[in-house]
Length: 248
Length: 252
Image (tube, each protein chain N blue to C red):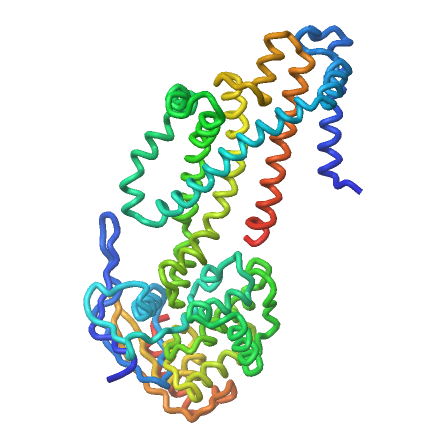
C-alpha cells in the first residue's frame, strides 16, 4: 500500500448561488522516498489537492489515505507570508511545530542548530519578526519549519517562488536529502518545467475543467541532479515532451 | 532633547493656559464661571496640601480600577470564548446585544437595590459599563480577519490541537482589539465612577467633591478637580498606549 493514496478524489466549492467543481476523480499513489511534482495551469486545483492531502480541506467524494494515519507532515504554503505568525520571531516560527510535538525548548534549539549545520539558512534573520524580513527570507524560514519536523511527508506549494539562486540550490539539495537520507515523500507544486524535471521521480500534469490527472511522466534521470543537467539529451527531450502537454 | 511631537504637545498645553489666563483679563469670560488661572492655581496648591484631596483621588481610582479589572477578567475570556465557539456565539448574540444596549445609567436604581449605596454598587456600575466593551473587542478579535484563516490553517497543519491553536494564534490575534477595548473601557470607567459618586450617595471620591464644590459655588476648586480628572484620563491612556506598544503593535 502506498504511503499516500488519492483515490478518485473530487472537490466542489459551493458559493451562495453557484458551485465550482475544481477536481474530478483524481487518482494516484506515492511511496516513501519519492518526489512527486504536480504541474498544471493556474487555478486547476493543485493547491486544493495539497490541502486535501494535508487534511485542511475534505474531498467532496473519494478517499485520501496516509500511511501511517497518524503521520505528521510539513507544509510550505503558497501564501508562505500568511502562514507565519507575525508576533513570533522567525526562529520561534520555525520551532513552532516542534513545540506542538512536545519537544522542550532546549531540544528545539538543538534540533535547529543541527539543521542549520546542513541546511544553510542563508542569512535568515532568526531574531527578527516576519515583517522585518524579505520575501525570500520568509520562504526559507517556512521551508526550514516544514523540513525540521520529523514528518515523513512534505507538501511544498511553489517552494522556490521567492528564492534567489543560492536559496533555490540549497532547497533543491534539501529536498534531495529528505528523499535519499530520510526516505521522505515530497509532493511539490511547481510551474517551472526544468525545476520539475530536476527534482521529480514522477510528474503529474493536471488539466481540464474540472481538472484530473491528464498525463504522468516518470523521470528516470540519474541522481543527484544539478542545474548543468539541463543541457543533456534526456533532460531536453523530457522538457519537450512536457511542453507539449502542459498548458501555458 | 524632546521630540518634535512632544514639543508640539507642550506648546498646545501652554497655549491653552495662556488662553485661560487671557480670557478673564480681556473681559471675554465671566470670572464666576471661569475663574482666573492664578486663583485656580492657588486653590489647587491649597488642595494638594490637604490630605482629603489625595484620599478622594485614591478612592475614585480604586473604585474605577476594581470595576475595570473585574470587567476585563470576565469580559476578555467571555469574548474569546464567544469568538471561538460558533454555537456559543449564535446562542448569546441576541442576549448580549440586548443587555449591552441598556445604558449604565438605566440600571443604576437596580444596582442600588442589589448592592446598596456603598462601594459595591459604584463598582458594579463601572463593571456593567465596561464588561461589554471587553466582550465585544475580544470576540471580534478572536473571530479574526481574512489573514487569520491562513495562520490557523498553517498551525493546524503543524499538528496543533484546538487548545494549542487557541493559545498560539487566537489569543495573540485578539490582543490588538482587546487593547483598543482597554483604552475605551478606561475612559468609560472614569466617567462612570464620577457619575456614581455624584449621584449614588457617596461620602468621598472626586465625583462627590465636584458636587460639593458646585453646591458651595467653589468654582476654582471645581476646576482643580476637573483638571485632576483630565490628568488621570491622560495618564491612564498613556499607560494603555505603552502596554500596546510593548506587547501588541511592535510585532505586527
